[in-house]
Image 1 (tube, helix red, strand yellow):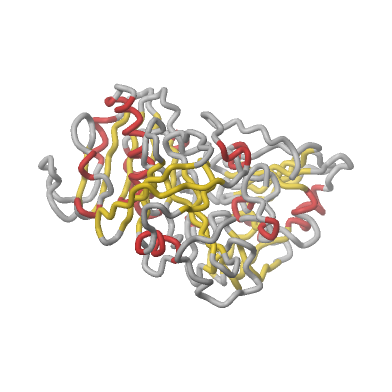
Image 2 (tube, each protein chain N blue to C red):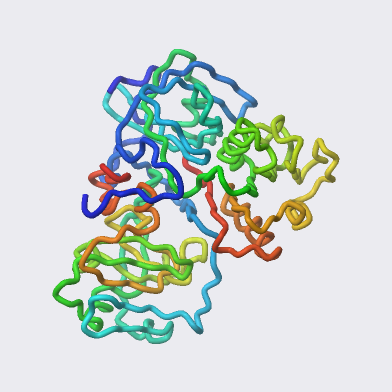
Length: 201
Length: 245
């Protein structure tokens, strides 16, 4: 592709933590959501793992807090080109939830569902092996509502629309079923290091 | 990639499904104020957009460094050019370049049109509520309704502090358009003040779609007003504009 007339070289030194096409948003954390921000009622909220599992599992807000705490320290990347570097979250590892739910032999994909009805799809391999969390804490404070609080999925090695806000359910499937943004043109996997932004990338 | 790539958005797919980049030649540059620039581009191998969709603009330096951002289309699909409204952000790497450097004749890498959610199907009547530069994709919807001789199908409620900070303020008159300015009376005589339920209540119809676009704070405020008026929150489509210099 041709050079853009008058556009100089990068203004900031390259940061090897930034995937291609991303910029560092610094201390900021933009809010991007397709729906109105919901009020999640923690008395009735549950986290459920269902679908192709041998032991359907569900936790109340209290029960999920009794599971072993797990933290993620690192970076997050939004498809709209901002990245937030060196941040951290706390909650529970998805591995812990799956230990109890026991995925069946045919389970290959996951559909995550929010209290709003928002969905996003992921390969099962992308939420196992210490790569995904259900989190309620950001940098030591309760996760703010506009950022998915009180509780969201966190899959930081993929673009952040995969980290469904206001998570309430993971459904294990034998096939990849496109979620909300994926039906609307975004990529089924969303690996920022391969710039998998849109369908066809 | 895995799985199906069948797009099932509410309207047409547009060129985003092909994933390709194209080039646009800047035909016109207009600066409605110091804080914004309007670019009108002739797009090579253009796919018509659906009102509400956006383009990605990618800048490329000699050392191969690139920077890209998304901008909503303001023009009607029938416009021979694609019009992008770019708000100039402080320290905005891309918006600053587009506002200060770009001239007619420049060629820009483009990808789009993109988006299958925040788009008007052109069928249902629409209540579109925008704050500041959040009105831009809604202006495309309003222009489309007017071009289709159905001006009353899109009611655009636009909020800003003052009229000179409201993109396309001069077009937001007549019909069921509402301009709500917090810092001065609106041109139609509405007293200065924040957007309130009374601005929206007369425009509600049972069969309409409701879109909200603006900053997170504005989207939250508008959403609360709509829900307070009995609008089902699940029917409201929202596009939040963050700082994305």
